[in-house]
Amino acid sequence: MITTEALSKRYGATVAVDNLSVEVRPGSVTGFLGPNGAGKSTTLRMVMGLNRPTAGTALIDGRPYRQLRRPLHHVGALLDASAVPPGPSGFQYLAAIARTNGIGRSRVSAVLDEVGLASVARRRVRSYSLGMKQRLGIAAALLGDPPVLIFDEPINGLDPDGIRWIRLLFRRLADEGRTVLVSSHVMSEMEHTADRLIVIGAGRLLAHTTVADFIRRGSSDTVTVRTPSKEALEQVLRAADAQVTTVGDLLEVSGLHAARIGDLALANRIAVHELVPHSAGLEQAFMDLTAETGEHRAGSNATASR
Image (cartoon, rainbow, N blue to C red):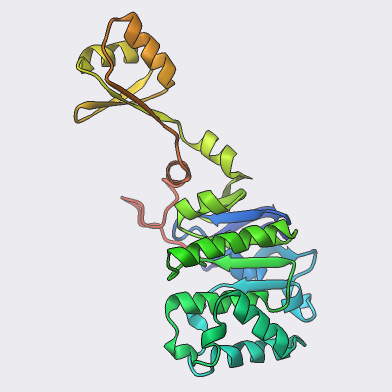
């Protein structure tokens, strides 16, 4: 389990993380979301002992990272795939890491095979594509077979087959009872992968809930309506407290379910040629919640560490 309690980080006058208290529990894939500048990477670096908090604590199974003996057996992390040195081969790189934690070479071979790099294990890392480096970083995170796993933007550079593979990997790891925390900007992938979400903005916690609840609470559904009597139907719908927007020859309606729109049209003898409900997705719910907290939002000069 990963726990932060009143975790804060300041860089001079800039607040990167502000009083963040969350628990990431085992058995689920938890997505860690936020706009650029939200403090996600700073938070992960404090959890991994790379940055010291200004205040508060970040614990892995009840202990700070720096107190973990042979830490790869407790937590594995991929924070920056491009940070791998180019000189050694993939096998040499992992073998060097493994030796520092008392892990045998057979485990190195096993994780290289698991991530699909066995055939290129003897090639130098400088020849690896970004997607291959991502797989190598994931292999490093898996080396100690840890109960806690942290991944920062893990699908960068992966092709569709690789994205499907990593989705299934995260699901298997969570089903094994591990704690899996994934930071990503790819909302469509998080919607398909994560069970729970932690959303932060400007360093502060905005939401900590399931994906389904976040979508349901964060953004309203809409209904697309095609009718030869747009003005008449719009007047009827507005009288029923719906929000209506004209988009070409269509009406975009929120605040009423499709069945209610159909009933109102029928009662007022208005023909409807098309009535299509659209469920709000994770991306829209995320944009609605974080619209005022992004690093580069329109009209803002505010900046913060990612």
